[in-house]
Length: 339
Image 1 (cartoon, rainbow, N blue to C red):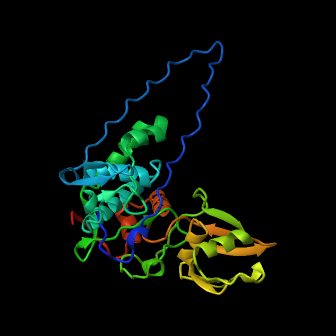
Image 2: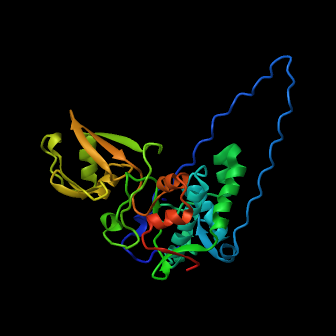
Image 3: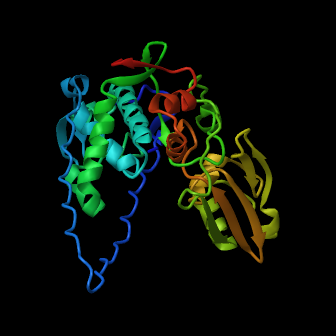
């Protein structure tokens, strides 16, 4: 996940997922002490940091105005902007082919958003809010996050952007809504099941990640009073006067295994609405009750539509290139330079 310029489609601002946090630094190693009486060879010199590749000609020729979270507007080249998006949206420790796929998604989604001009009144083209457009991280902020890996990760992400210079996913000649998210529960979701509008390139496909994903399985526990309060504040009109064990009923699922709908005290909710109401990581969940306490058992993270980032990384580890990854997650979309 987690996006320029809304086209007025019903997907709206809910498209983007929250940005992923970068993976932590590996623990340091204690220095090996030399054995007395043995010749100790001098340590190998530390290799110099690799130079950061410059973005390609297409990305360098495009500019956009970024509305930062503090309200400031900065003008950036597309290449510089995409570096910040990839750094914010995908862990830099991921495989290079996954990062390249992410760069293409970010470029494509940027162009799709650009056509909407949704931030025109603010003097900008796109914003740094992942719930509206795409997350963005400056190089200084990224370096602080990455610590000793900053030089290597900076070059790695710059290469992912430069190596895919100008490459855009299109359908019928225009940039697609190249939405993405963190991790799937075995399959991605059809856009129609989440946002109510079918798009031919955003359909359910298998996704190979699993329990190697951090927090792939999570739980949320709520008391009956907390559930009642959430339902009341949402104005659901649910009748929660009976025993808590009867509150949740008639749960249905989509083909991908996510909750399509359920009833809470007779009020019907979509899986996505339940996810938001109870702050769940995804709509793939089960709910159980014992002694007035509800337990939501959740798998995966994100809305489930488009490219799974951990799925892309799993494909890359298995030998898939970035083009193969994109072809898998965006059915029928084509790559072209610019759009």
